[in-house]
Amino acid sequence: MRVHIVSDVHGAGTALASAAEGSDVFVCLGDLILFLDYDDPEHGIYADLFGVEHARAYIEARTANRFDDARALSDAAWAGIGVTDRAQRWTILESMVRLQYENLFAAMPTPALMTFGNVDVPALWPEYIREGHRVVDAEVVEVEGQRWGFVGGGLTSPMRTPYEIDPADYAAKLDALGPVDVLFTHIPAKNPLLNYDVIARRFEVGAQSITDYLEKYQPRFHFYGHVHQPLSARTRIGRTECVNVGHFHGRERPFVIDL
Image 1: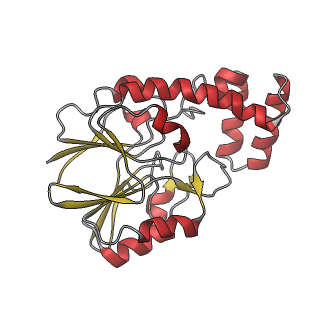
Image 2: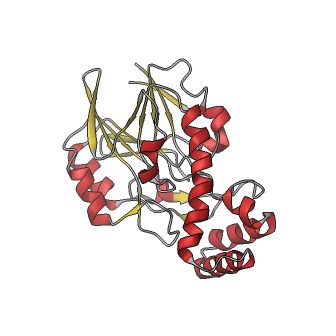
């Protein structure tokens, strides 16, 4: 069974449309929206709203872990376009997120198994999924006699991305799965090799609860994304092979494996 897996699409709709070609099963592990393009600041919602120079400065502050500075830049940028009410900010952002979702869900292959990333807005997905799209979160899917478990979202972090979950709640979603043959999540287990981004030069958030789950149940594979340029794209935790499926926005090709 040939499986194509993508994660961290971040607006790459053209490449997404052909990502399932040649596969038996297609899986998307989330992060569809492009708020900021760290590789090309000319693209993304923030550049569209506030201009390229703001996007560059904002990216620089976040990359350096100067999150207070980044929030101050954001506040000034919103004020610069006459928006001081935080509720109004979301109204504007939601309209731009909807435009991206309209294009991305139209490009999403069918059939597809999908879960949420931390840079997603789950409440909006039901309006855009098409026939053949199955959204799976804290749930097990039987595929050709195999148990595939899915848990979406990220953990609370200084980044304050749209879909971040309290660690205890995230652990509860994992526990609800029970044993599986393959685990699919957006974020990795907590492990320095898997969490460190060599370009951003920082540790991204990994989940200790995933590490605990892998040590307890030892699924054959754990597939995830989130860390765009990991120090190590693959390692083992016990008998489980942990695989970062790659930054689809940058690679524009799926991870391919026979299961």
